[in-house]
Length: 362
Length: 95
Ligand code: SF4
Ligand code: SF4
Image (cartoon, rainbow over all chains, first blue to last red; front, top):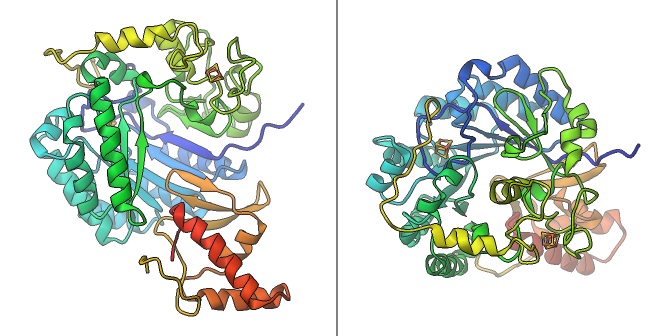
């Protein structure tokens, strides 16, 4: 039996708890309750297993990973095992005390997310009064500590007009890297898609603005730009290919090839509570289900791009076509591609109510 | 020094904040780890990067490699500038 090349990264959703309620959140509608979360000892064991199988980077996310009081312990353990540690946080819990704790752990990088450039709009999206101000404080603490700062802005129809202000803010905060990410339509964001998807004109303007900023900040700030699939002709290589680079762990310990994989019916996923990461990676049927190219239907099967984008995103094929093993309809070679234009046409400016992300009763 | 001028006897290359070089036991090669990215330097780049310590100048690095590989200093120096300029463009090195 052939050995699967080692994964590069472990994406650890430490908890689904979060003080914020962004309607564009890509967490699943069915979130993991706090009492189902892995314990500290279990996370430390998983990190050992990750280092042993050759994982190089640990991405700590959620929910809000800082809602776990054992976060510094987890980061320190990962750093001691040589993993590159990346904390993805909303920053509202990054107080002076929390920063001091984190600094003792050897953390490599913090990615701080903002809901906008201006406090009232940002706080209304996050559903957390004073959140924006706290994030600004968090950014200052990160810079004062001499750590690398990435500022992340998720953009959508309702805040895209503020993009130039966001870029300026990211620059003024002293970011090493600014990430401008169009909303990815999974989980809560999918539920709210009609109210969030920008128009093509908005998208084109945003792209031009990002390109201008890239030129202006060249050599000083790296700008990463995640485009919205819905207007593309080629799909994204979701996760760099199913079961090829990453393992994604839910707070409960369930191991997924992609964060939204649980939406796919008929697949069950192993848990790191009783299965080692090595076993999950090499042998779990869920990881093998859409690995490489053997599962592909036409037009992917005979397409020259099949090892570039790996047929796009399985969860998107499922969400939009009801079939996880179909070619991602974002691809214009897919017979189902016309559906994308219909979905775009359904989105509108009308006063559609956003459904805020909530842990219970959502 | 981000003004674009490189003087090998003065310019001190540094890893950009958040970028780390480490040896990857599993794959048997060096790897550069950066936020959201990882790249594998080729053998020559790996030799150079191991000598980037935030103290040595380009000439300082070149001298060590010229000795190690018994090669002319000028050739090594221009190789180093080429490799590090490329990595600077990818956001891994400050020159
Ligand atoms: S997107 Fe908003 S609600 Fe979702 S985890 Fe991040 S900060 Fe919390
Ligand atoms: S047909 Fe499949 S492999 Fe080819 S570009 Fe489209 S999604 Fe990618």
